Length: 81
Image (cartoon, rainbow, N blue to C red):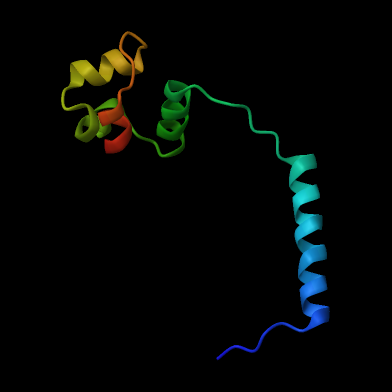
C-alpha cells in the first residue's frame, strides 16, 4: 500500500500543477476547428488517404462528398472514426 503524501509533497504537487497550468495557458494556442478541418488535419498527420476511411463512410463517393464539403459528417461517421 502506498503511504499518503506528506504535507511537503502535497504543497509541492500543488505548486507544480499551478506552474504547469500557467505555462500551458501562455504557450498553448489551439484554434477551434470545424469537424471537417479536424478530419483533414488528422488525415494529414497520419498520412491517410480517402480510401483509408472507407470503414467509416462505406463508399468512396460518400467519403469524397464529405471530404469535399458537399456532405456533412453525421453521427455514424463520428462514431466510426
